[in-house]
Image (cartoon, rainbow, N blue to C red; front, side, top):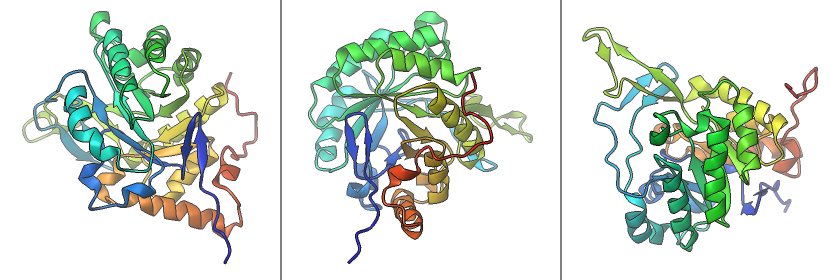
Amino acid sequence: MNKGPDLKITIGNLELQNPVLTASGTFGYAQEFEDLVDLNRLGAIIVKGLALRPTKGNPPPRIVETPCGMLNAIGLENVGIDAFADQKLPFLKTLSPPILANIYGTCIEDYAELAARLETLEGIAGVEVNISCPNVKAGGIAFGADPDVAYRVVAAVREKTTKHLMVKLSPNVTDITLIARSAEAAGADSLSLINTITGMAIDLETRRPKIANITGGLSGPAIKPIALRMVWQVVQAIQIPVIGIGGIITAEDALEFLVAGASAVQIGTANFINPQVTTDIIDGIEAFIARRNIASVTDIIGTLETNRPGSLE
């Protein structure tokens, strides 16, 4: 019997059985999907963003469908680090894929404290740092919009953890490679991108925003071309692994990110459309490379051919 292609990848110190991860905020704390998908087949699981204290999030309406996408302004609702450790982590520890905890804060000290708390928890393989949040001490500008502030956040987390440190980048910047370089210099082990793009929708009958928060984060297939471009740019600019996110619905979508240079992908909005999409994509990647007699999924990473050098410098 012929052995199938090798889907295993390495991201820093993480050994993954395949390059398909769940995106934070779209997969809950994994247990919500246990009756819908084989969780142990996933490459890794990234849980819903965590804060130091429980957060109710924004008032409804906070989700609206848009052409080829979805706007959300959930407001990072979560149970807080204490409830996560007591109520959510025990189940997560029964699963075989590595578990990464996504964290966010309103000041650098929040990030550092969360990282320190997670460092003591068994069953957490890594931390994904969401730097798209507003910095209250700096007038509300997002941490990930300023290279210097991004550096300080990542450095503060790096000082507190020996676990894998992934940094999730915002696309709402002029040059994402500047932020990427800052995160790498501060000690990130990998980068994930992109987070949602700020957008809005209007109800013409009421002449009011369709989301109570007025604006929200756009995700889904509509943002895939932008995400692909940014992933390709960042891959050219840094040396650490990149995880691609944005509008991935099919195995072909995921493979485009891998060819562009991403070492892995995260699946987000598609989980709401098809709860089994992650395993469907894993199967599709395997079938694609098997048909082409490619021995390992790593053999297609970064194989994009262009008519000019990839660097945009």
